[in-house]
Length: 144
Image (tube, rainbow, N blue to C red; front, top):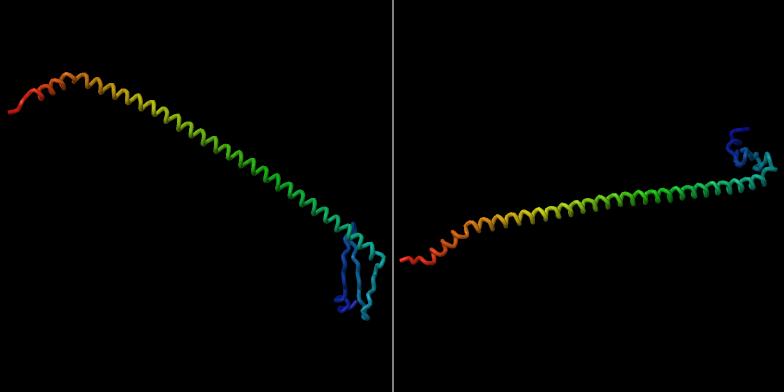
């Protein structure tokens, strides 16, 4: 085989359980010499079968991928719902603590106010007589 014949060499791969290399060479008068003419039609059927098998593999892979994506989406939604519930629970707890402490503050302030009012009443009753005497003195005294 010459270098010019190598450039005219055409390799054709036919997939099957065993890989068969079909060689065609072109001679000087450009007529094709087929080394294995019996495999020509069988090769087409093998190619079609291989294509169908490849389509099934691709379809199966797509279905698996779709299933994994749905599973991941469902898992992410469950995680988000659990996190949202956790945040809501924390919020409700803080609101109830805040409301509870403000209720306690209201009671404490009411008690302090009542104590102060009682102290003022006691102080006013102690000086009540003195205030009346002072007012009477100022009203009855005439300045000249």
